[in-house]
Amino acid sequence: MPEPSSPPCELCGRLVQHTSRHHLVPREEGGRHGPTAELCQPCHSTIHLLLDNKILARRYNTLEALRAAPELQKYLHWIGRSRVERISNRRGRR
Image 1 (cartoon, helix red, strand yellow):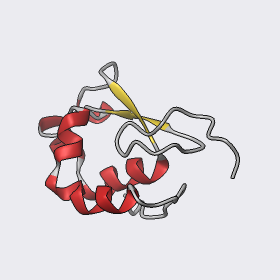
Image 2: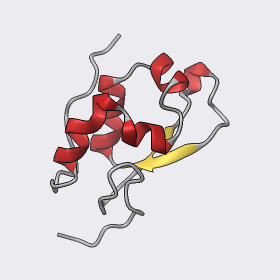
Image 3: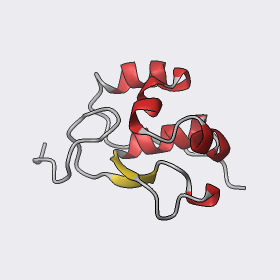
């Protein structure tokens, strides 16, 4: 496996090839210029699969809150032991 070229995922802590920017307050909820976190694709997709933007903005707008989210605990336990780089659990198109 090639050396990771990105910093570790700020949610799961794994070293991965690529990360993407996650707005801690979704852009649609006023977070366009707010704080962001670099997340691996599985974490980013799973957050948006399990939590809607209003909940993210109100309850889970920090990394600490996301890490503690009950909805993510089973996933975080699994991904922490996984070598998965990509996951196809995306939301359906609207």
